[in-house]
Image (cartoon, rainbow, N blue to C red; front, side, top):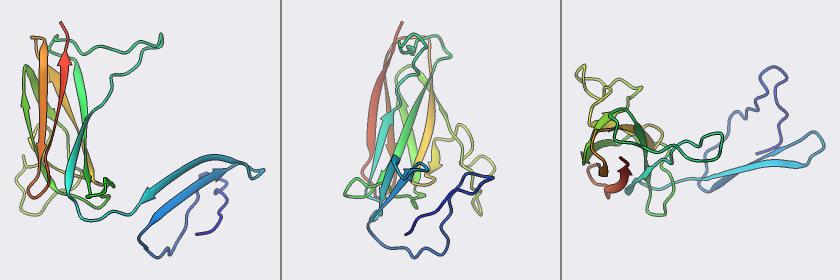
Length: 172
């Protein structure tokens, strides 16, 4: 697609009038001497096929150890759901409604949706709602620990897609 130099004020590079094509797009960041400093790529995707739920790892303390999710009624675990095609590629345009179900001693706290939908009620897709639409092919939700330790299971489903379930543990 060509080579661009960053804007001197914003430090951003922008390509205009790009024709969409299926395949893999690779972006390579280079320093002023032309040496590669970073690289990223993305593949175009097919139709949404399944959901992939991941429990995000706990934050790491400055000493290198991870925080522990405890049964104190206030610790939060974050889960990310991705809408994937049959080949495991992220469907960046997916906005499928997703339904969340939790089991165990924890409270589903939900997330939010940026986009208001025509005909939706004031509480539809709001924080705490167990139905949220994917945005950019993904959604993140929060689960707050209860006061009893043990296994927590989170399930995500969407009509026509394979569902996903993940488990995590809350410590004493």
